[in-house]
Figure (cartoon, rainbow, N blue to C red):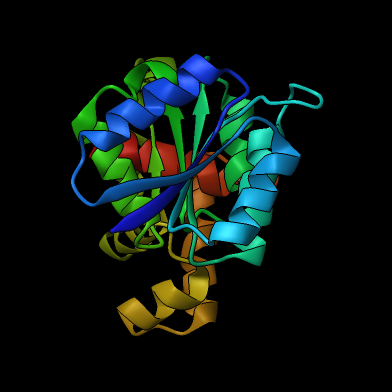
Length: 218
């Protein structure tokens, strides 16, 4: 049984998410929160397997959900977090994943009712992987639609590395999975960034955007 805490400042939305979760097997909602402080208190008290939180909550209604997600992953690494947003915002995606992708997911609220997509996000974050809403990937694909696929330039080994990054693995885990040294993995990643034309962006942005490129074609 996966124990879940839901956070959203709107009662009806909390109830809606709870109702959808109730249709999935092995899910138990143990607490609800309406702002950042009450969410963190609920996580400390219940130590849930999963948190589903709105991206904007009091007190500032800006990025509390993302800040909470990063704090939760730091303080309670066994807790997966799904961040829900009403609007697709690439900056939110990048901010959410900039310190690592393990155990984190970004979904649009309108897609929470898609039980298969929600179940996929839950399975991903609860297994220390990551998940990005298909709509976010589609927007990224549309922006690149007229360009040849940059993935065609990658070697087979670089594709292996990128696929594991897309699963949410850190460099050390990628190295262990592929029986490589971390230095070799870093060289492959730098090559990937270069071939995907991401060298002029901060590393956290490059990592997230490279994952989006990979997901767009898989």
